[in-house]
Length: 84
Image (cartoon, rainbow, N blue to C red; front, side, top):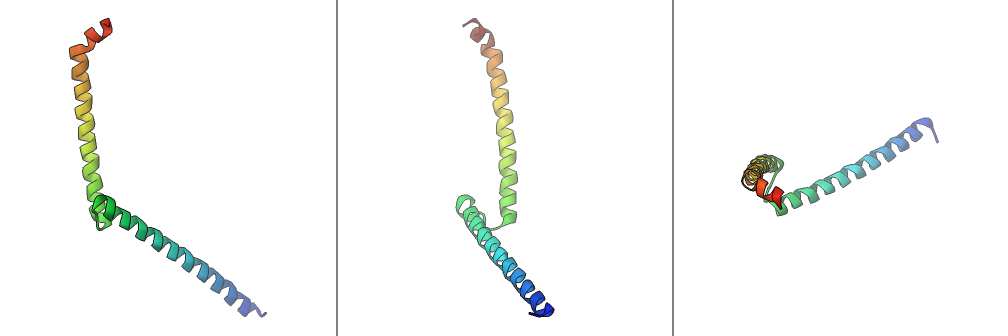
């Protein structure tokens, strides 16, 4: 086999391998986008990012409220609970 033929065959194999990787990535993306739509009703990435930001904000707010409630509970009942 000539040098050029060998180079061609090597490039062809590499190209086919890369195409398989691309196809796998596209398939994985399709699955993930379907799950995003099913689980969170998001049709695209920007919508999902907005939802994520809202959920993170809601989580921080809920965490702060919880910590405040625990602090209030401990202030009110701490001494009594220590006696028990």
